[in-house]
Image (spheres, rainbow, N blue to C red):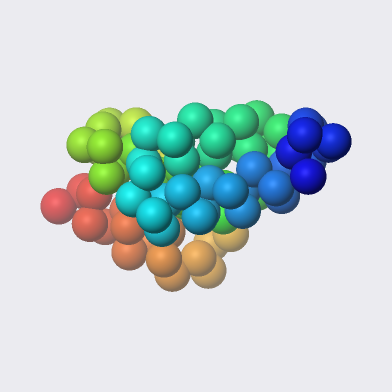
Length: 88
């Protein structure tokens, strides 16, 4: 899909999630940063971007991503939990 539709944000979000689940956090961060640029309203992209940065030890960059996910989707319990974990 990305080859034919390089601006298709949901494909970037999905790929970033798969990379994150596979613990390929640097790759996930790269893909999810692109997703948030293409679709800045995509709360899941921001949450997963936060997770990737958090797992890479970059808490100072993860926290704003989690906060953006929560700003877009206040009921996002996973983003709230990840933010709480990052702030401890």
